[in-house]
Length: 298
Image (tube, rainbow, N blue to C red; front, top):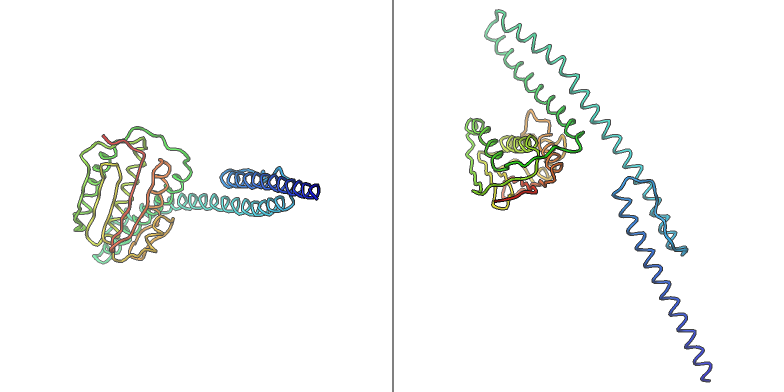
């Protein structure tokens, strides 16, 4: 009887040991799949997931994931090709528009020298304004595609506080003409960062220009002791859904006329190229845009 009992105990021990070993191997295989899957999502490679185990269920799981990865890679490639083609088309269109616009401007200058009635002068002035708007939109499209094609920006030690003050001064006339009251709170400390100065100017100008388009008559600008920047204004004509799409390219709201919807999209691209973060919030009928850069405060 004792022999049979010990034999049963031995069989159970071997079974438990085999199960433990199998579980360990399955855990190892699951970890292999997890690490390989994370790697395939972040790198451009044609290598599929492979596992060291012969377990048919684990290998079936790996095969199913590989099938989905093939689909994902195909969709990613199709999206990338479409994006490249869109950039190329926008660049070509904006470039091709320059020639007829230049010719139209030339003919308008000639018409200005001719004798004309007050009504014709009014019509020509309106045409001139529309052409200037079209030229601005065309240049915006062209610059957008150029910015997207730049993978790296040349960086230097930039005085963020000084650039912000310079940009605010540049918008003083527009704010005064629009009756916009500015509430500016900037730290007394010096805030610097390894950034591209021209790109930073472009970011601030685009954000301030956006604020003037949507503002109900106020503007709040802040730079705190930690180097975080904030831009806020009352925007009762907006909602949370619109604010969530502000950084989407070509997105505009009805109140923003003569806009390509690229200003904040360009700002977001430049901020990320400089290693920073930009986001928007909508609270109490006010739009707030926040910026953070790797910077030093002293």
